[in-house]
Amino acid sequence: MGHIVKISIAKDFSRIPAGRFFTDGPYSGERFRKEQLEPPLRKGEDVEVVFDGARGYGSSFLEEAFGGLVRGGVIPAADVLRRVSLVSDEDPSIAVEVRDYIEKQIARVHG
Amino acid sequence: MVSCGTLLFIAELDRSIRATSGKVPVSYIPPKDKIVSQVIQKVGISALMGGRQQAKGDFDKTVRHWEFATGVQADAKDFDKVLGNYDGRIASGLSSSIFKGVTEAMTNCAQHAYLEPRQDGTRIRDERRWWMLSQEVDGQLSVAFCDLGMGIPRSLPRPDGALPGWRSKLDGFLSGLSNKSKESALIKAAIEIGQSRTHQDHRGLGLRQIVETAQVLSGSQVLILSNAGGYMIQPDRRRDEVLLKYDDSILGTLIQWNMPIADGEIHDGAHSEN
Image (cartoon, rainbow over all chains, first blue to last red; front, top):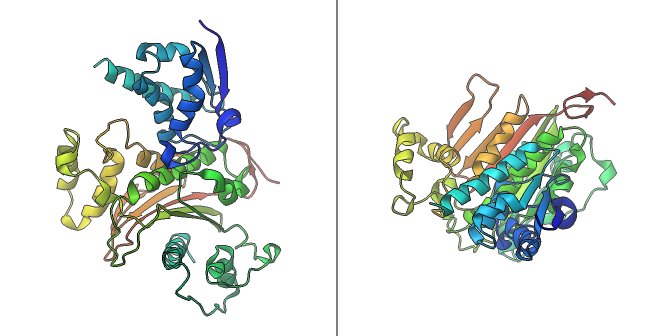
């Protein structure tokens, strides 16, 4: 296991994440993925994403941030769940939802 | 004044004034009713027409918590302005659910609502604008959100462009309903089948999240009006869903969340009076 980078979405990105693509708005899932998730993963580090503290998470934001991570191929699809851990103490259903998005895209990649 | 009708009125007025760059003068005769007059000021209608703004502290208690916001992106920076007053009065789970629904509605607006002209007989080139209003009356919180775009029924995938199986699913939905309910059935189909016009199966999830708020708190209701159709979900009522048909189209989409709100503070599962 590599060095773990902790990312709090509410503190390091936005307390009000919304939208899927850059063109949707200033705190989109695509922006979060490209600016926060991908850089440490490219460097070989693992990430721990903390969801607590934000107003909430729409499906568009979560699916693009995490499902998009699998689609984007920055790291092998099979490594995403091993190298990205999800912490959501305030609402555990968020981690379940995100895991579902990741697994669906892994299944799609592997056909 | 009801929030959904008030919001549509503000949206149409705002759109027209923006489209004409203010070159067409608009005025109004102030209402004699004090409360109506205050609502018109509180939600920005009088400001749109150059009216005098009333000091914040002077608003009646029934008007004080009307809040209005508008924007062109999925940017929730005004969410706290519109709903921040209710922190502590609604459970965090409900607040989070409303946030999800509102931001998904903003995202739908940014991505789908304005892809085709509105067909309202004007030549207005629309920006991707949304409008939002919150209102608290008689123990009920209402949050209304609208766009003046093409409407959900028109935004659904064309049969030749849809993913395999979509058409048969849609036909199944419509087969049990008369043609008179088609637009409302299409709204329901968009929620339950959940396919986006983009042909990508990882998209099209937002409408479902918009209606899930009705499940979070007993006594809640979600209403979606789009063009001449409507779909209402009210899990606690005997008729837990209702399809609506109107003679006229609102030429856009309006979503309204209604939920009971407590007088005291809510501590996520417990209720205490101040």
